[in-house]
Length: 157
Image 1: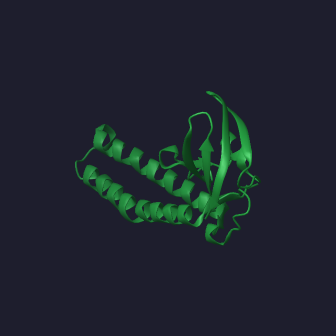
Image 2: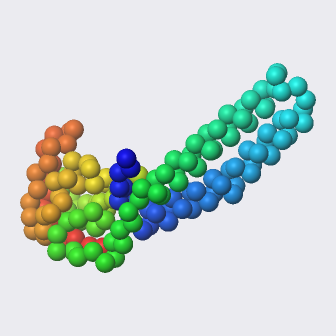
């Protein structure tokens, strides 16, 4: 049975673009590589052909994976979410009490998570601790490096 996977509109558009690239750029390219390798003759000892067929398998698997993800996705339009409490898809500004600095996280689905862009998975310890909280709430969360303490300063779309 398929599980529903929550994704932001932005994340969904990104995977649609990825699927289009796989189908209309990568797939034709690998088909051409196979044709070129075939033209070299004996397929039983043709390393180029073997490599191209292996690459084709990877491309087709990636296409199937992305199509499956899209089929399971429940797209959440974050621009319409209320910002009175922390939920999936919202941006949360925090005062990090331990480091005496501000940080903003965007709570997204696991597929979209990218800590370099401050996008954290809804299933991460920090996001789990923030869900349901409001501005001015203080949150303590156990992370691998110890206990972090935050004060929520803003919630936005």
